Image (cartoon, rainbow, N blue to C red):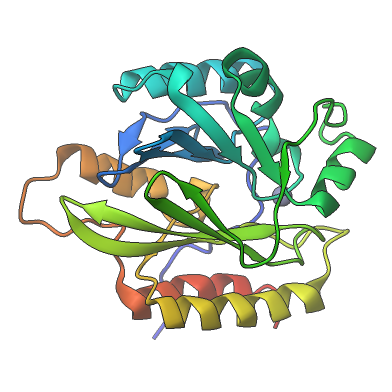
Length: 259
Ligand SMILES: [Zn+2]
C-alpha cells in the first residue's frame, strides 16, 4: 500500500503568512492561543493563570495573547507565571512584556536562559529580561492545586524541557505531555535528543499520558482539531484525547528525526 498521509514537517514554516488562530478551549483547564505556526497554552488554576510558552517577540504575538486571554473569558491581570519550554525566540517572545505589565514570574532552564541571552535569532535581538526561576529536572511546580512536572529533555536545545500536567474534559481526568523542542536544528544534539525521547517516553508510560500538546500546531493538526472542538457536541470524544497508544504513535515523529 502506498503511504497516503501528508508528511509532517517539523520545521515550522516561519515567514509564511501570519494568521492568528481562534483562541480555543480544548480542556476544562487548558486553552490554545496562537497563530498557524506557533502558539501557547493557557492553563487555568485556582492560583491564577499559567502560560506554557509565549510566542514571538512581535506586536502581533503580544496582541494575540492579550486579546486571546480576554476572548476566552479571563483577565490578563490574573497571569501568574509563564513556563518557557526552551530558549528560542518563538517560545519566550512575549515573556518580558507580560512580566513587566502583569508581574507574572518567568520560568526557564538556566542553560537556555544563557543561550537566549547570548544571541538573537530570526532578526530578533537576544533575551533582554531576567528569568525568575530556573527549573530542576523532575521538578513539580505547584499553582494552587495544579501540578506541572518539568522534565529536562535536552537535544533540540541544550536546556530544553518538556511538561506533564493533568487536564480535564468535562471533569474527566487525563494526563497531557508537551514535548518541548520539536525539530533538529544545526546546533541541536541528535544523540541527546534521542536519549531525551527515551527518558520522556518512559515517564509518560508510567504516568499514562494520553493527551499531547504541541507549541507548533503544524505538528499535530492542532488547528483542525480545535475547529472541531469549537463545534463539538456532547458525546463526541475530545480529539486531543488520543490514548496512551496514540501518544506513542504521535511521539514517533520525533524519533523519526534521529533514527
Ligand atoms: Zn526551538
